[in-house]
Amino acid sequence: MVTTTTGTTPLVRSSGPDLHRKRLNTWQAIHAEVLRRIRSGDWPPGELIPTEQMLAVELGCARATVNRALRELADSGIIERRRKVGTRVTASSARRTTLRLPTIRNEIETLGARASYALTSCETTLPNLAAMRALHVGADEPLLLVLSRFSADDRPHCCEAIWLNPRVADLPDAEVFALEPPQEWLSRNLPVTQSDVSIIAEAADEACARSLEIEPGTPVLTIERVNTLHGTPVSFARHHYPPQHRLVFDI
Amino acid sequence: MVTTTTGTTPLVRSSGPDLHRKRLNTWQAIHAEVLRRIRSGDWPPGELIPTEQMLAVELGCARATVNRALRELADSGIIERRRKVGTRVTASSARRTTLRLPTIRNEIETLGARASYALTSCETTLPNLAAMRALHVGADEPLLLVLSRFSADDRPHCCEAIWLNPRVADLPDAEVFALEPPQEWLSRNLPVTQSDVSIIAEAADEACARSLEIEPGTPVLTIERVNTLHGTPVSFARHHYPPQHRLVFDI
DNA sequence: AAGTGGTCTAGACCACTAA
DNA sequence: TAGTGGTCTAGACCACTTA
Image 1 (spheres, rainbow over the protein chains, first blue to last red):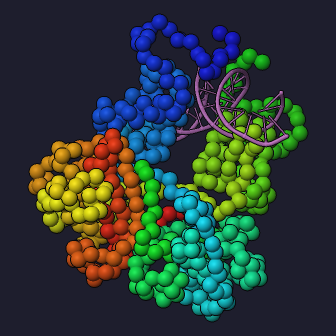
Image 2 (tube, chains in turn green, yellow, red, brown):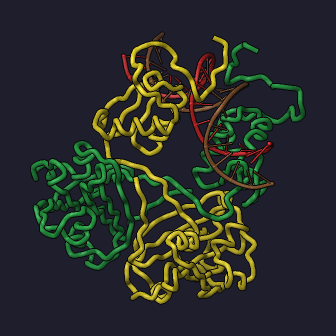
């Protein structure tokens, strides 16, 4: 058997049973079919499902295609796979999803609003406790602190406080941040090897409340981000969103 | 050349240039190498990187292997791929990451603490406004409302309020929830085709504050989840976490 | 020792899109 | 129309795990 295969229009391999079974050829189709069987209750939580080999034969495709489909399902936490054991439908309601962290500008424009940026202040100052811990600096090492705000259609959308360490990165003149958000300047000029992100609920402090035009003490959703370059923390950003803001996603 | 390849221990294909270039054979190695070149600045943000074909030749592996590596990078938002155009290093700081939503019990045990569950109340009652909207029911349709709390090593960790619609799902006797969290019972007994999740910051109401042993009005992190079966909303859960709680992840 | 998933390969065709 | 990524296939070997 030396002739090349056509790859995407294979003929029925044998005259075995199941001649009427529709062939599922793409990994998306396999993915959907397996998901259907799980959701319909055919394959209940905790159950072992057929092996890749069996599914490939049943659905009429290569094992690699089944593998791709099942890998996506495993990545989503829908199924759990173990060598030698097989593939199980996940019993718990544990799920995974992809969380996108776009730029603020992008986030606003996705909502269909016009984004505008305004610098609030930009000064070299001694770090507070959180900044000392995040950037691994002492209380006597001055940092650059930039406060700014984004508006969506002229309503306050989010305010940012970002601490930058001038000893580990070449920072621009302060005037630059009057025109461009630190986040955008950073992404173009400072390489990052890792970001640690936290989401927390906290009470708005004085500056944040003034920026977002809310009462001090109002709950705000805070997204913290520490950017690290080869193990050295470079920037520590905190984005604060007013109470009506929601981080939304599907599973 | 009809002899089969061994797949994982191929010999050098030709006596071309670059005999000293180490062959990168696994998609993880390719992934790491490409990431290294991006982070080192060799391939700056916005730049086109070589095609799959070129990388496969340079690194000495199959194009499918390069494809797998680059696909993972694209899934993380590190690069952007377009047919006919090529692959670019993402210019913005937009990033994606996988967010895990484990069961509360799992979450607590991952922290190394002992999880305990306690039912607060369980009653059939008319929906509030949020529940009406989430479950698409009218103000006169009674729902089952279950309030409960999880503790980690006897400290309040999270409290839950969940609304269940008895008209679209067979619900158990109320006593069941005295022993088992609704979340766990649901995952075993009610299939779900979609979940919509929101993360918000809000002020603790009276019941939530009592349950978490905090002052009413304290900011809490709330994770809302609407489970849907074939388009019909079945349950509406709200998990409230006290202020020190952080949703943490890397990028 | 054996079974299952994980991955690599070489070749092929398809889908999309800029020119 | 041509170039690039997206995917499928058949076969092979490896890695991990249970028995």
